[in-house]
Length: 222
Image 1 (cartoon, one colour):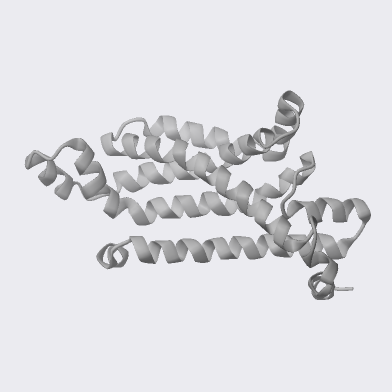
Image 2 (cartoon, helix red, strand yellow):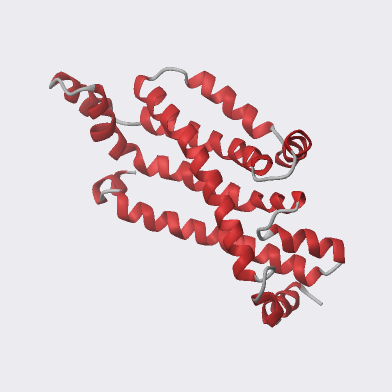
């Protein structure tokens, strides 16, 4: 059988649409893992990136942290956390968050540093407080690039959250891990297809968010 036949057989099998191992259940689990990891990463990465970018300090340190975070193998870190912390969501969240923080952190910093300094200096000259300069002058201009960092992090999380299945949790990785163990390649291909579709859906969601949140003038100039 070729890949298309595997895909058709997986999605046409009614048993894959019901029960605890059904596609809706596994998809919802995967979405929950991804949203939690992205939220934690954003809480860590966005404030640090905004503040350091606003003041223009710490760029080299952030680059080193980001490089170190990207160099860590997610699966190896998962195994280490599992041995150390045991079963649960925490061993899964730690590698996913570490994977997602670098693109958010670095992109947010670069987005803030790319803002034209003229309106920033004018706002300060008018006596505007630093917090208002950050959120009312710099952030609206930097938002498209910041969203691109969040988008990159989200796609990496969606693609990597399959590792949750290695420690007996759910998500779409369950189809891949179980399919490999059972030598059921129909299930493996079906799970991989769902992960790819979810990554594409994530791209679409961020495109829609950018259209709704970024002003047309900023979109044209970016």
